[in-house]
Image (cartoon, rainbow, N blue to C red):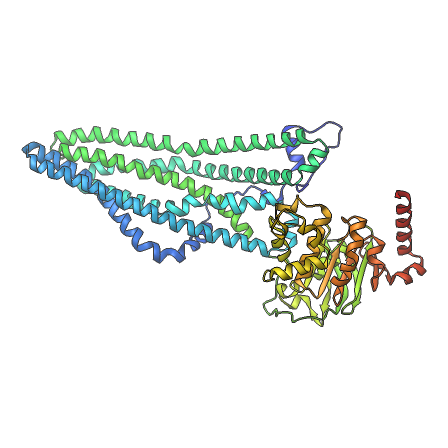
Length: 616
């Protein structure tokens, strides 16, 4: 399981929240508790900057036209009431009505074009952000993925980026429009009647003071929602990947219970955040009611005293309605920014993550190698204080085959991981053809190493595509030649569509042995100088293994090969065998030498013979 498990000490089963906590605790899902961080806003703003020149002229013009037409309409209404209706001038009234209609049409056209244009630009920004995040994750080291469940990573690339969409499409532009509209209304109110305008506007700071503490709570509430959502996605991914194990051990009810608790937790946190978010509206409505009360109270007095006309009073009433509208949207915008900030913090956490295995600024491409490899006093720790390898000295000549033997946890796979620079040594060095692998580019190193794993991964696509993954520019003829060399051609041509047969993720329509044969063809097509076989024949039956032994000789010919295996048939012909235990080389030599020595290797071989004899 990907989460860190804690087990209860007693015999009773943990229930509810304790059950959930006992199974899923993710290090990267700690709830954030920071103030409003303008650095995050600026970082998101950098993705908008490339489009600023493209956006600014058109959007600003449309924004100005839309705001201006909206502000002019109440003045036209005031003019019509105070002048046209008194004079009973039908032509002038028709002219005023026509002017208002034209203003509404212009406003609609300007807003419609602006929304469509900003949506297009916003989607480009989202594309850039998601591209950068995914590209960065692809470059991160194995240590990053060791500590995080796949679902937690997935939610950052999908849900969290999507939560920025509204902000980056119309959110920012609407913010500018509302600010312009608010400033315009304040100017008009103060210009036509400074006393009444000031009395109405004074309610605004009171409203902001009341809502300040609420905003902090809203932000924290949405951060909790993001955390809960991340955990649900992580759990879903784990359950889908492990569905066979779940059903094999009849743990469906337990998994449903875990999910039910997480789902309930997420539901509660969402309701709380949504309730807090919606509490902005009542504050706006109450403040707006106070504004109308002031208008009717003072407005009636000013009309009686002759300081205000009826038309202007009606215009003021219209402006007050429009006045609280942008303030309400600004409150919602603030909530939206809080949600977006909570997401951006999670996104930029990953973008700021630096690979543990990084290229030096002076790294140069590794030239085509022969395959001479030196491990010089190599040491490695996955965690401080826990040695995985200790003082490994090994000299491998080009073209040699090296078998790594030992119990689980002895350090076999660690040697392979260090050779490929999936991790960096914590002591000593690894040198290929005289080049320290830390001094060359990672791509140039790994492009000359081919790996065949026990748990081979088959991508969704065709058989041909999966083999071609070893070298994307390979021709169909080269793909088929590689398949023939490893004896995969025979089963491929018997599939419904041959090499064009579609396989789903992980290749579930293929047998374990067939998937391994495809991985052999993939590695052969890549034509690496160094070949790594990590338990590559463990999942292949004896009959199939006999068929590919000759193919293995072809695959390994002229290449420096590292073989991790337990089967004697796979390792007995290796040029050199290393026997590892707890990260140390305990014995080394060829098969005959180690058998004569009658040490650890001899004991492993005898144990294997006894097992084969007992199992028939």
